[in-house]
Image 1 (spheres, one colour):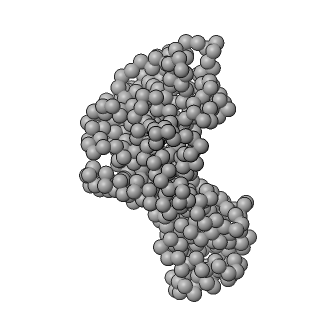
Image 2: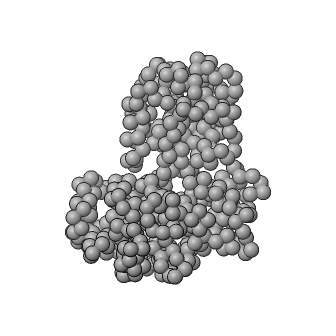
Image 3: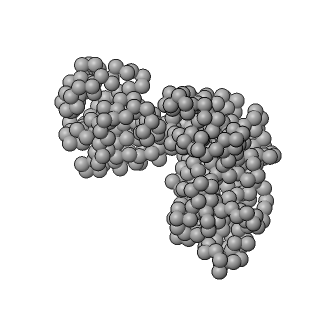
Length: 439
């Protein structure tokens, strides 16, 4: 069983007095159902489980009265002895709640009643307004948590790397001293594995169990196809081909020297007017995140963002790599990244940052200045350069040399090297990106 950070969030929610029903939202196949059911079995005497996607008959439970007693009668009639309702000892799991909008409306009544805990799961598309919608969204009567695929730290746990090792890495980062060579080499190996495996739970579990990359790739491509199936299920008919074209253009977008998203790369002659909604759909599905260009690399970052100039990264690098040509996984694991090396390592850092909850920004000027990412760290604005091989972070040095023009606290260089610090540039290995937690 994979250890997930969502477990702590679920425990905090359960221990909250007068709590509202919980909705765990997230992209498809990120582990919502598995984590919720495992938590429920460990923390409640009785679990009542309804999956509206697998058994549409459950939808009829919520077609009539939404009073809690009436809902319990209906559930009991359908499930029989499987459904045991004991106040404060029973949890009700409503899985794929986006397929039963009236069940979401009923959350208000469960909140007011207070006898039973309710945990729901839903795809981001369903929760964000695509497909069926409830007549009344129970504002103030639900708690929303977004769940993502495994981040790099969870991937480390899955591969037997425990807290003592992570604490060693933190000490090296805080003191800006090199990681011991044996540990450094192991972590270099693990970050490359994470780059090709990513964080989809089924994929990670299969990798841990078998170490067979061909099996990993097959699973990843099945997930990508399931996303394309969702485009058919949820999108309006006129938008379906546009969404698919937008999604499938992402590798081409990131392979360009200038990685700014261009609608003309999606389709010759395409414009934002035609394709902007399609890109928004893919983002709302939790598949990609935008990285906005900044007018100036300084705080507040959101206030300096240029809304119509951005790059697009896949939220899971493993899925991104699976969209590239056969053999790419092997090349990455061997350190031979060729033309895609910049795109892969940048997407890797974007994956790490997004799963940490960081918004993505970069800085590009026509003069040639370009910084891969700009982020808030330790209360200041930091430039982040991602290097697939050794590099000198020329743009970061130029910006740091002009404090009268740029209000930047320092720079972080991420790449295939050990920890070090020179002037205001902190050099760290790629595998330390997940430790940049101080805002």
